[in-house]
Amino acid sequence: MNTHELIVQLSTRLEKPQEEIRSVLKEVIGRLRKALAHEQSFTMQNFGSFSIQKRDKRKAFHPIAKRYMLLPPKLFLRFKMAKALRERFKGGGV
Figure: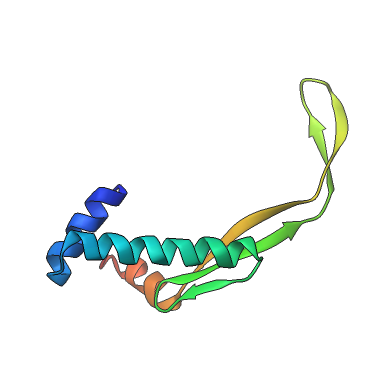
């Protein structure tokens, strides 16, 4: 499902104009980006939470060069599914 399909589906389910749905979706994504840029967590009730975590520097083996190399620390996005959503997936009711 792409963004356009999501907007059309939400528009029909909520009986709202597509422009209104598009602006709300844009605002939610904007706030999510802003929170994650400041390394804050972002939680959506009954959906899950997004957070930024830091991976420490580590040693990894390069199979072509056949040597170990030091990888620098980096930030990555983590998503933890809410219990309500996990139960829906488990029950097959999605």
